[in-house]
Length: 381
Ligand SMILES: *Cc1c(COP(=O)(O)O)cnc(C)c1O
Image 1 (cartoon, rainbow, N blue to C red):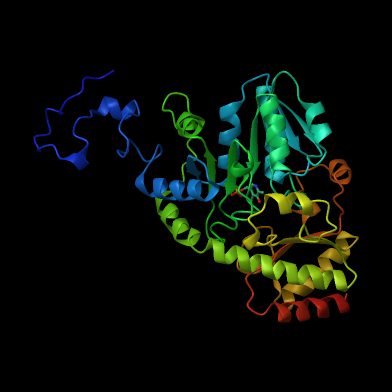
Image 2 (image 1 turned 120 degrees about the horizontal axis):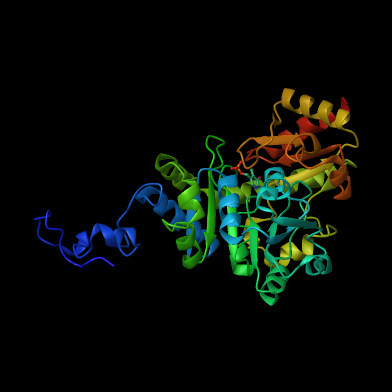
């Protein structure tokens, strides 16, 4: 521990807002709140955004990262060591799947992939060396809903951490309020909402966030996926409109889901009462934000899916693109794009049809007109 006193080189008089009683050594020891040691560790812009995201998710603290993958990998690596084990939803973002299934082999960390809606399967997959249950609130791309309170109970009973990727459902579900220990986000998607940056966030207890940022042993501090502070301030501005955007995404997705169903197209939408996830989402959700902006339709084959997507792009429905949460509607053929890291046999096992088109429904003011355009594309197939 360092001595407490005024730095001898600093002759300015002490004032209450200058924390004059701390030294550089105290700052390194993390003792001086409100003083920023170095920008990769913390900086004021990142702190403003992190505090806002933590407030949104109802966690004590958060840390913002340069990408969603930066958040996911840092949070996971903070909790596991060689020889440990993770239980993960089989329907998970392709990059996360690749990290867990391929990359963690380097550290001899094993992962069991399960149907996360089958709670018995989750329990049965737990081993003495399991450290994390990992899932997404709404899984990509099949839009299954994770029962977070039930998974949190399993995690607590076995002294594990439940980590939840809430990228598809910010504001709609608050996983930490439902029992999740750690919440991760790709802010590249809905939170920023403009597809002009890449960013992520890790939300959790103050203790966990402090551990991630520890100068000697913190994964975030040492691997260094810090978000650029200029980006933080631009994302913070966009965060202030997220509640309005989520309502509009949800309203438009519901409209299109109903129209697709009326047109006899096979559709996955968790807002339909006969969807398996509906009652689970209903019990967890913050109702006023709706069921989210994501829908998926099944066109049977990837050829028909491609034809439809090209026509829709031509008609101005939106863009054939893999991201989501944008103000324009985006659509992609999941099996050949965002889930292409998932081997074909596993795609089959998880029920991913090759003709599945995932839509991230945009903020269109006139969604009736959008449907008219989609309908004319369907008729011309
Ligand atoms: C995009 C995405 C990620 C990865 O985020 P990046 O910002 O691209 O690194 C993780 N999880 C989900 C659900 C995503 O959609």
